[in-house]
Length: 139
Image 1 (tube, rainbow, N blue to C red):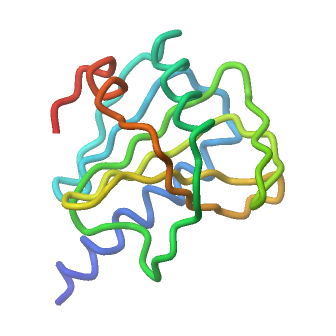
Image 2 (image 1 turned 90 degrees about the vertical axis):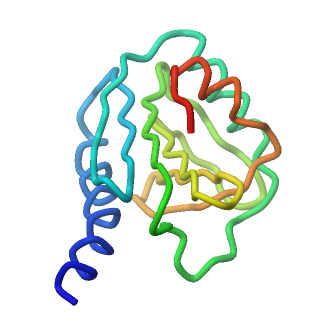
């Protein structure tokens, strides 16, 4: 029981840590394997920034889940250099990072925090294969 609570809490703590650390400037991408609770750090580059921008531009809906953080899969935090303005029917804000959530058996989706630190979960049309290849990640 305690182990289950610990493992369910870890992704939430990771996201909380991402939120706190987001105020600090970083140029590294962080990849969390949710099940293994292991974080890998990867340096960012212009190609990764371009692929991330494409994903942001292809936001098409909001995530309609009660529990948006999966038990299995990956979470990728990508700092944006420079910051980007998101303006759509759900949010109008400047962001300096995105978090891509990749559930094990579902399509990936985005998490961003607005100017008031409110989380927003979005679906997007873009495939992430190119981004994963650029990050040298095979899932």
